[in-house]
Image (cartoon, rainbow, N blue to C red; front, side, top):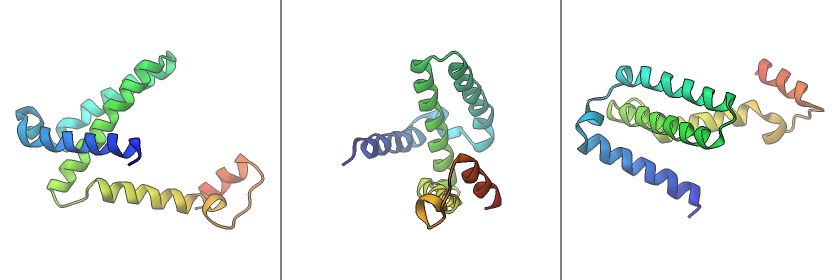
Length: 119
């Protein structure tokens, strides 16, 4: 299996364990995680501005955790899960990139941007 898939599966399994076994993780909701996610996003922005590649990597990991956490809560509510979210963004990207996944021809990034806006 692709190492990326193994790593992502590991994160999903850890989230399942934490949600089941950790008192703090069990209590979290969309609302309680919201401010923490905003803080992590700002920390990523700061790391980018500082061009601190090690910190960028760590902050991206923190955001991955939050996204997986939201998907787990969504699954528990029978609203959505990580599969639904990932397939949704894949379909959106395919639809928004007809120059890659369809027969639309573009000459440059400006035409790509114009197509994106029209879609």
